[in-house]
Amino acid sequence: MTDTEAPQSPYDLTYLEDTERIRTRDGVELYYESHGEGDTTVLTLNNFFITAPFWRSHTQSLIQNHRVVSYDLANHGRSTRLDREPTWEEHAADVIGLLDGLGIESAYLVATSASTQIARDVALAHPDRVKGLVLAGPVYGLRGFRRHRQLNKSWLLTLQNHGMAALYSQIYAEVISGQMNEEGGTPAFLGFRESFMAMSTPEELANGLSLVQTGDTDPELLTRVTAPTVIYLGDDDILLSPGRGRDVAALFPDGRLELVPNAGHVPFLDDPDGFEAVIHKLIEEVEARD
Image (tube, rainbow, N blue to C red; front, side, top):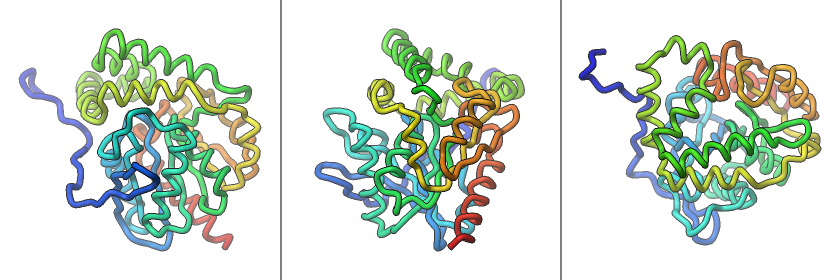
């Protein structure tokens, strides 16, 4: 790449203009995408930094055998804009409303970072609707998770005081694995920055980062999740060490840890093929039980 060439985003983030929104509750309609066919459905849950189109690049293998549904959270992306950020309970209710609107009886939930809290809450409130969970870079701890809230608060302060570009620089250094940072160098940094800046507005990020300061972090909640669960954790995750990851996975009655070597807090960026393989494996295991 020459100095005059702009780095390319690694993602196609264009929206599908002919997709109808799904009404999930009073005053809320969600943008969604559905790709692939099959008897099983995988529903992806966004953290507050990504949008529905992002998942196309990480589900190409899955859509060969399964239906994959992604959507924008209420108050984010192309979904309904509200005068306040929904609560965690409302975000969880939207998941069920989306499944109902699409006529889906149950689904496998795939969540990342902050959205692992939404996945947990849906699995607790509606166990019959959740066939399994894949939780990438989960935000759970053994005694609550003050570290996660402190990290997000620092991101919020950076955003408020210095703007989106400064926030991206901070997040990239903290979230991306050391190996990917070294190997990708400046082109990867700039390419991912293009995607980051395109997916969210400062207001959306501020809303999400503020919501993360709330919610129940009691680890006892994890012991009540009956759905088969995979903790998908990078061994270079800023929040959980491999040992703590095993301890967290052990809290789930039917949980296990899949540790990703040389991966950061968003481990499917480091090993996208392995990520899809883990989801395939969980589905095969659960379906074989029926």
